Amino acid sequence: MDTVLTRVHPNDAGAGSGVLNTVTQAGMAFGVAAIGALYRGFLGTHPQSPGPDTNLADFAEAFDRTAYVLAALAVGTALLAFRLGRVPAAVEDGEGTAGRTGADR
Image (cartoon, rainbow, N blue to C red; front, side, top):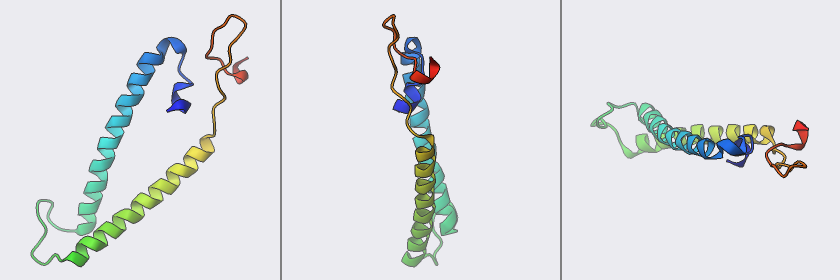
């Protein structure tokens, strides 16, 4: 959150925060739906109900495969976050305004 919001001009902080929160909430909802669809796909049954020959081992296998995908996504996200690095804190200029970083000067 800080990495994104430090790149927003202070005059646009309210709008930037609102957009960030909206995108975060939408991403979480889409993520839950996508992982649920992936689980159902791994289960390999009709989307509305498991077939009569579906047993607990099938559910466990679908769960395991979905967990492996989630673990891979978590590792990928961690690597991308590490690569992104830290954004320097905003530095006040001689006029008392913040928002510019040391690299902007």
